[in-house]
Image (tube, rainbow, N blue to C red; front, side):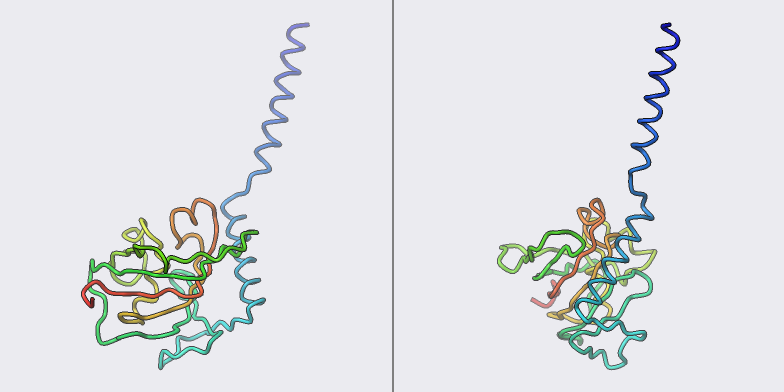
Amino acid sequence: MKLFHSIVLTLVSLVILTTSCNNRKTYADYLKDEKKAIDLLISKSNFEILREFPVDSVFGENEFYKDPNTGVYFNIIDLGDTTYRPQWREKIYIRFKGLHYFATDDTTRYSNYQSTFPEVLEYFGPVNSTTLSAYSSSTAGWAVPLSYVGHRGKVKLIVPFEMGSSYDQSSYQPTYYEQVEYRFENQW
């Protein structure tokens, strides 16, 4: 009788364990959810995704370019002072407004313009497979447009969670920034 109860208890435990494991999302599920959320944002906002980067670097208000290496979408609002490009390991000070976690029910728009201290990004060159790990302590998506803009440049960004902050990555949340402004350390 004890053996029968042990077998039944073991079987019930296995059933509970296997059904609870099946309810977890896989990484592939999170990527699918992200793609749907980004597509919905693009559709609802009437964004146009350009196949080629504009030769003159001038974007229409709702035109975005998707970086093929990172999946980050960006729109250049203002090129800034392009006579100076960021140097390796230079600090880039970042102010943003309109940060929105659009794949959630959170309707808050976050900003750091009123904060005493801006976010700081150390520049390690264009974001690619070689430099990606160097940007891991911050939002790597912020670095993507730096190949195109100068000091005081401004952009709009759609950042996949893989290219976002450690919070974005751990919560699988893509983000949209209505404006990100760059200030280069050596231009103050």
